[in-house]
Each structure stands twice: as C-alpha cells, then as structure tokens.
Amino acid sequence: MSLVGSQVARYQISPKCPNVSTVHAEACIDLAAAYGLTLDEWQANTVRIWFRMTPEGRWAASTWGLSVARQNGKNGALEAVELYLLVMMGYKILHTSHLLTSARKAFKRLMQFFGRKVGDPNAKYPELNAMVIEIRKTNGQEAIELSNGGLIEVGARTGGAGRGSSFDFLIVDEAQEYEEDEQEALEPTTSASPSGDPVTVYMGTPPKFVGERGEPFIRVRSAAVTGRSKRTAWVEHSPQGELDKMTELELQAFVRDRRNWAAGNPALGIRMTEETVEGELERWSAKSFARERLNMFPSPAETLELAFTEKALKAIALNAEDLDPDAPVAAFGIDMNPEKTKVSICAAVVGEESTHLELAANTRFSEEGISALVEWLWRRCKKRVPVVMDAFSPARDLLEAPLKKRGLLVRILDSNEFMQACAQLLHAVKREKSVTWFSEQEHFFVSMKSTVKEPVKNRPGSFKWNRSDLEVDLMPTMAATCALFGSVKFGRRRRSSNSDSSDGRKRSAAVY
Image 1 (spheres, helix red, strand yellow):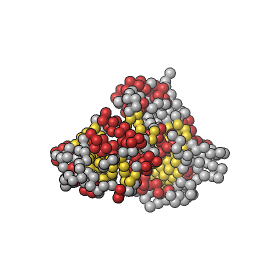
Image 2 (cartoon, rainbow, N blue to C red; image 1 turned 135 degrees about the vertical axis):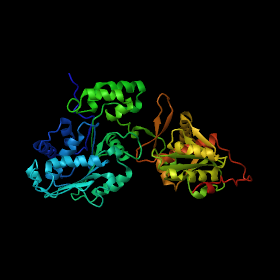
Image 3 (cartoon, helix red, strand yellow; image 1 turned 180 degrees about the horizontal axis):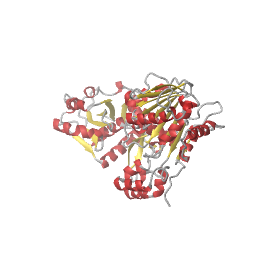
Image 4 (cartoon, rainbow, N blue to C red; image 1 turned 135 degrees about the horizontal axis):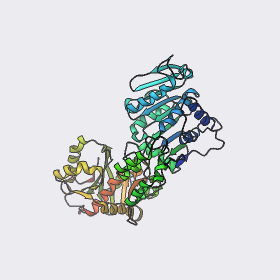
C-alpha cells in the first residue's frame, strides 16, 4: 500500500472569534472548482482557516500564513484565493516573490483564467476575460485589472514591486527569503488599504540560515505557534518534533520514519512519490532533509527563560556623569550578525567596585571597513587591551587574522569559555550587581532584556544566549558577554590613580 500524505496540518491556527463566518471560504473553494482548479483537502482546509470573517464583515485574521514543503502545491491554494478575491470581492492584490522567474510563473498561471489580452478570442473562460480591462505585461511588473475594481500586480521584490500604490492584500511568496528592508518598503502599501481591512499573506518554507533573510517569516511563525499573536491564521504541515532537542541518532531515526514523510507532505501519493522522497533522503544530510522535505523549523525561542528582567537591568543603570572618565578599558568584546553587515563593540571599563559595560559601536559594517576598524581598535588597545570574540561569531572570520597581524591581543572563547562567560554575566547582573551600563544606551537595554537562556544539550545547568524573538538584536549582549569575560580573564587590572594612563585606554578615548 502506497504512503499518502496527511491532509490535516500540524498547525491550523486561527484567531478565537465568536460567530465567525466561513461562507466566503466555501464559495472560494466552489469557484476554483468551477474553473478547473479542484483543491486537495489540505488546500481547501487552508482556505477555511484563512477565510474567516467576523459578524461585522471583517477578516478575523490580519496575517495569513502557509508553510509546506516544496512541490506539495501551495501555489494551487493561493491561486484559488487570488481568483476569488479578484472576481468576487474586487480586491487589490500585490503578489511578490523573491525571484523574477517565480513571479512570472505566478502571472502565467493567472492568465490561464483571464486570457492573455483584453477581448482574447482564445480565452478559456470568456466570462472572466470579459471582466478584464487591462493586462499589463511589463517585465517584472505584470498586472491584471478587472472591471469590478479587482487588481493584481505580480513582481519580484528586488524589482521594486508595488512601490507607491495601495493594496488590500500583500502576498509574500518565498517568504523564507523575505528581508527586513523589503518588509519596511512593502508592508506600508497596505496601510491605506482601499477596503480598510488589509491582510498580509506569508507563504514559504524554513529558511536555511537564521539571519536577516527570512527573519520576518520566522517572526510571524513563532508568534503564531506560541500564541503570542492573536490576529494570525497559520497553517503548517510538518511532523511533531523539536529538532533542537534531538541527538544525531534521534535525528537520523526521525527523518527515516515514513510517518513523518506523510505528516510533512500532504501531496505524497498525489503529486509526489515515495521513490522521489527516498532519493532525497539518500542524497541529503539529515538536517537538510528535515528542513527541505519535512518542513521543520527551529524551536521558537519564546519558550526559553528570559535571562535578565527589566527591573534587574534598571537597578544597575548609570547616567553618563556617574562614571569615572579616567577608568581604563580592560577589554573589548565584538560580535557581528550572520550576514556580516552589522557590528557591535562593547568596552568593559574597570572601576573600583564594578565593571562598566558600554557599547562603543553598534552600526552597519562592510568588509571594506575592516582596515578602519582594526586601526580604531589599535589606537585604543595597542598590545595591552584584549579584543575578545566567541569562537562561532561571524566577526571571527573577518577580524581575527587582521587584528593579530596588526599586533593586537586577540582572545577567542571556545564553547566552554563562552558558557562560562554567559554564566558570569548572568551572575554579575542578577546576584552580585557588579556590572553597570549607561541608561542612555536604549539599544543595549533592549538587547539584554530580550536575551534568553538556551540550555546546552548534555550539559546540565549550562546555557548559552539566544534571543526571545528574531526581531531582537542579540549582538550587544554577545559583545558585552565577551568584554566582561575578557576583562576578568585576560585584562590588566586597574592601576593606581597616579599611574600613567596615556596609552589610550581611558574610557573617553575608547568610546564614541
């Protein structure tokens, strides 16, 4: 007996709202079938989760999401939705994809319903073609406009799709590639929605790397599955399990379990064969198979324990005038984001009773700036003040060699040392209150208060830092962790007040 994919999603989340109507959902499913698009059961269920309206006639959810592994047919569900929104509701839709080729494919599928031009004698559905008042085929900015006010523009996000226009629906396809700057540019297009009831739709698969690319998608998904969002309708086909908590042997067994294949691929046995999946399992690593074929996301960090409370952080905050300007910097900590486009530098300033942690920089960065950063650190450190990085920080790839070549004292924390450093910072803030920070540095405060403790597998009691939400910038916390540890283990201690401090290690010279 051949394996058949489960038609019931692992997550079918919709806002709790009394007396919701699914009339439009059933009408959408019927309309698609009338025009040759018969939805699979799981696709129809997606429409039913999304298309829920309040008694006041507004969408129950303002954010819709669908995540299913590739080649399962998510675009079929989307085509049914777009067809109904255009023909029956006259909405204005902006459909964006990461790739221009994907956008063109989506547009060609829509033209199968509406024809290739106004008054197309070869249109498959003349009554739909009769509604068309314009079909625009401008490269990368295709559009179909209907006589009832319905409009869909289709384009690649990199091509500036939808700029300067207003839409009721923003479709974010290939959402695993969606970036923050694209979100900032595109989502305001629905702020002045003609219907007054805008919706953003996210569709995609788990991003390969957790970084700027895919962060908005991960953020939406995490908020939905943890219950933090009350306005999201989320559908996800994936097997039960938490990859982050599996040993390598457990992961190997997990990806070989064919029940998990069925849970993550509703089209298995319909438009996808077991033989295809077997071949992928042979060729791919277990982690790649779990992500690409089983649609497995990392565990949401919201389930982890916050490391620092706002109360504890505010208790150790200082005003700028409270710090001795002659206090020496004992160490600098550095961290970068995975894309190596941002850098955080923290100075650990040793006082008589406490160590002050101050952001010296938290800014954009490019590889062209390596030399300038190395010289900036050299002027403040010479061969005396250590520069400290986590062994797995992206900063190490770019900075370790040039810093050492310049003669600076570079210290790289291995896994054990970094766990010690995390524990040290936690103890210093919560128990000893032996560190301080500037109350004016809001970015540092936000980073610290949003840091969570992620337990280290097979190391009871040990932990490392993670962030409570992917919107959070963890780099200032990471840099501060390295700086404090470096000041204790590698830094020179505070000298007497009459000693020479002309080597550039004063706080006033170290921070800008």
